[in-house]
Length: 349
Ligand code: DAH
Image 1 (cartoon, rainbow, N blue to C red):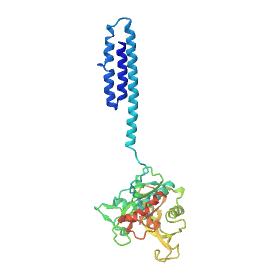
Image 2: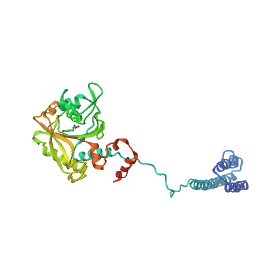
Image 3: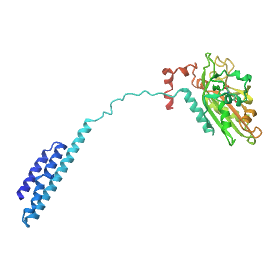
Image 4: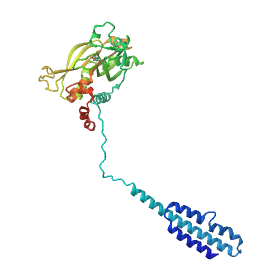
């Protein structure tokens, strides 16, 4: 009996040493230790042995069993290591190979300017508000002190969709919306950037362009004044066009502000000496602005006896052209990759 067990042990050892893969190992495991294995039937036959021999053979069988188990485990570990090494070798990646370059897009210059404007005003405590491009006559004109038939409506040739709806001609509409929506009639400090539309088709104007509108309203005793407006616009223009720019306020007319101004900036091309860009005047008009008209305050729920404020508006496309020295407005809208890709690198600055 003892020899038989030892023989099983030796054969097992030899077979285990010959295993070539995990599949073979699994089969051998069943053969050596499974229900139908020689070892198992030996254990089952222990009952037929003498009381003296039974424990001896029993423990020998168990010893051999655990030795086989151990050898199988060792073999399994080795095989797995070998399989992993083979896999790693097969799937090796050459990280020194140059990669295929992916083409990166870039931010459109107009979006770059919009983000810059938003960042600047947010840093000064303004909210950024959005409004609809498809606007009602009410918000685009009526509530901005431009009743039907008002001659100043001719200043802006509008795209009417129905009698009531039009594509907004100015982001000033969001002024009225913000005032009206503010139920507590609390102070306002907001800008709105976005697309605007007018029926223009000459070489220097596009039917669709971008504007930014700003509005500040506070209690009368805080005395929001022209000086505040001037200071704010100075920060704005110097940041967008250049620190050396100077501003000039010219009295003008807008229905929603009183007094109203057009704001000029020293020509960034000639520095104010006079050149073809500024038509030899040394100045370029950039903004419309003024103190919010009492009618506008009243119509949108703010008591002009208790509140005052200023507003301003400007075209973003022109700002982008000034900022980047873009000579033709059409470059901004034709999406020529040769033009747009010049702004790639600037994203990393
Ligand atoms: N909405 C005017 C335009 O499109 C610009 C403007 C002028 C906005 C004066 C204002 C303002 O807020 O006070 O021409």
